[in-house]
Length: 198
Image (cartoon, rainbow, N blue to C red; front, side, top):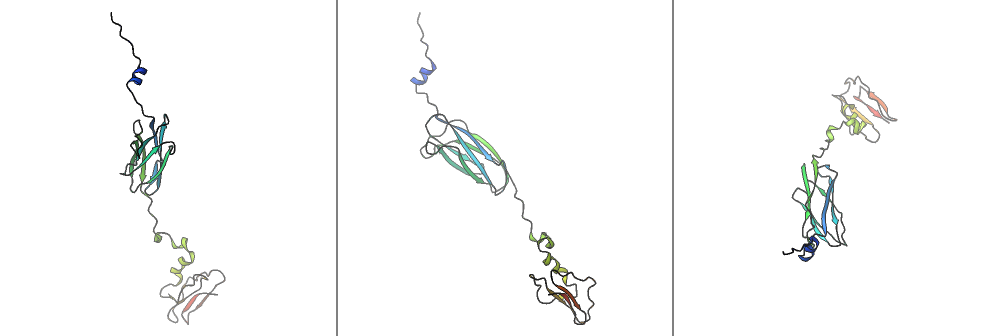
């Protein structure tokens, strides 16, 4: 009867040179998870350090662009990058082992994160903002001189003074303008003038 020796897996591993990666892909996260087009996303890539060896990896942003990184004594992870998306959509960010700058690829499976990019709010056109909100004095200019009256010269933005003119004896507007500050309202139908003056 022959005896079959039992060989432990530890002995097998040592005897046949079974190797394991010293560092493994840890995690990848994106913050914030939802951004507008043109806003930066912060991507954090981690490597789980098992021993003192080093390894390389790549982070793929899901829009055709990527960033390489590696972990060693002088470059410990996490690696933090920012990325800006040019169009809306849902993008899958992945991190996987790659040979980078003579660093062998990190072990372990790829890790993933998702970011949602939405359309940026369109700026409000200046014309859409009521003039009365932006500049109360300028807003009143449109009604200072009621047709057929016309503004004589320029409206004094600093003081608010102005003069409206028309043909002599043109009927004056029913509504009398309120003058700002120390200005005084004046009118002269014979000369065809009215307005606000110091």
